[in-house]
Image (cartoon, rainbow, N blue to C red; front, top):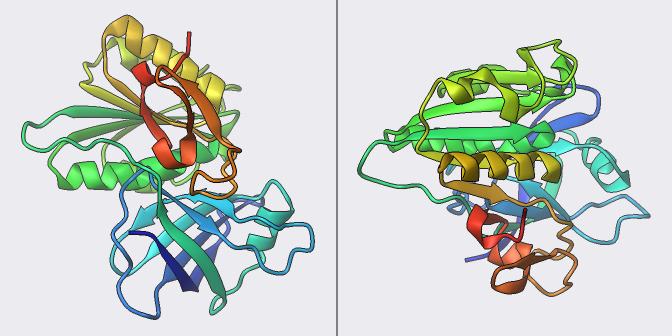
Length: 255
């Protein structure tokens, strides 16, 4: 079930100059149930140039709080960075379909993220840990300042890092990390820039590892009405916001 809620900002954090972490509560009661990989469409008030809601990944969710990690790259997201404790943020949630989380047999999940694409993997890792699975992470960025929330990821499992310039972890791309040749993984989940995810899919297919991908297409409405986020799949063109954003790699027409 989808909800439109006026959520209260209880904490505003700035992990770096162009990011804001908003922690929200629902004054009307418990938060609705949300799954890792789903997202929220937030209304941006106070921006004369922002007419549509902005899609934001769910960084963490429970009955008490919802966390949104926002990369401030345009007028709308920069306006969100101006929110203060006690302000209200109107949210449409939860939207889309999330990652598959198996129950029963313990599996080793590898979660691979780049940039702000690491945001939904924190919540996914927490849920997988609660289900008893082993969780590892590969986090990538251009440099050390691009790799966020490392301490929180380390509470959930082993964290491996790559940076393009070598300022943190191994130098190179996420698909070049040495752990990939040393460990066995039962499932990969990834989110981040499309070229990064395409490289992850190529590695997963070459090594016979199932992989789910969270696409970051432009999603203006979140309901499948505006057709901004259409992606070509083996089933034809689909709206990422409604049919995804998480897809099995074999559903995508990626080389």
